[in-house]
Image 1 (cartoon, rainbow, N blue to C red):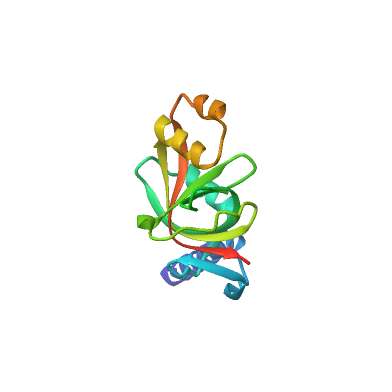
Image 2 (cartoon, rainbow, N blue to C red; image 1 turned 90 degrees about the horizontal axis):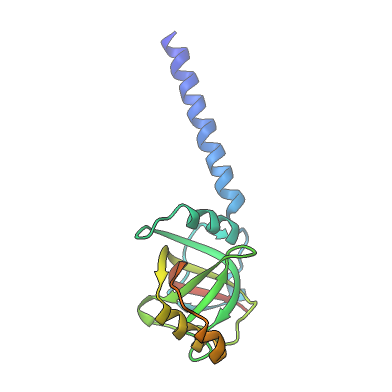
Length: 168
């Protein structure tokens, strides 16, 4: 009887592990041709590069102060027009993440809006101050009226990128 119970427990564990792997694979980007991308910063070396919808779920589970190491593929919504020192990347239809670059060690091209990218680094949640929001709006080329309309801090999904791939 004990052998049957052990066999059943082992099979249950195997099935559970397999379903978790299949769930992970459904969120992972497959068949990436690195030669089709320009690299900025460190080489993107993750075995698991996720789609943006998987990242949205990860962000929703983070609290301020939490971080996760992750790589994901998405589209650039906006980029710093001054020198390419940050970008806003789509997560889903109404959310985005603010991507900055580790130690300001690299920048991305200033003309990559709507381009497909892959970022590797740390995802976290933070609160952006009014002063920084105004600075970012200025960098993005927003009007004085749009900048003046910023009056309260904003909870943001943030990302510190070690490396970025931009599709050619």
